[in-house]
Length: 342
Image 1 (tube, rainbow, N blue to C red):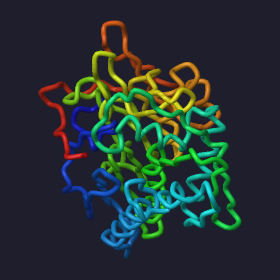
Image 2: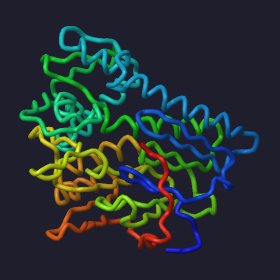
Image 3: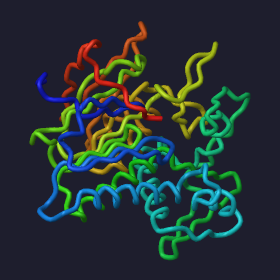
């Protein structure tokens, strides 16, 4: 790993960033989807306006938030959760797209990914910001109880205990739409970060790969290592940010849909894929599936991954899948500055 090249970003539940904005044509940071979105444009076609490109990208992210945030009572997903058990509810076509992508992921992962986890997530307090171990939590109803009528942009639930939460896929979908918007506006090189979910366009400013740091799952001031990727999407899921820790141990916010309990097969899963939607959903599923089962899935979905288990001594043990190399992280005294991701 070249010491002279800056670490442009870090992907994890919480990330690092050390590169100066001086090499960008335009950049913006905004609070959206419960976190910080950062977009940087580094190169455009002649005549293209980088500020308009960023405006379009941010517009796509805000639109997904308005449609899919369960915290918004007027969002499409909130309307679904209130009414789809009694009647078909018409929604925006983007919600249909995410539901169909979610169903494909559920089928690919044998149910390890499932958007019907809302009642369980609420019971654990992960949406309220006050997580606690419940006496009893409902198991998710299961994705098969969501009926999608794509021809009419309508959705119905076939039982009344279904509740949808797009927390494991919506950020990735928002990044895909934002990246597509930037392409339409003539962007050739860009970096997009939505709460640690990262998507890149083209090459890094120096013409080489993008260098992305994976946060250490138990040391918030350190990196586990650094990945080098080209144009790609990268997502990390794990228990480093939202969790319950008590005398019974540590329980993260990723729910195993098959048991209704927090998943603990992995403490961290970083997935690299062409699609941010795919990377986001797969990183969530990996924490449920565990290393062996998820490693078997990777060739079928065209993705790569770094999967982290904890050893008996509490130290992280990374499994680095084919096609990736985890470089040594910067020394603690030279670690990148922690940005204000929420």
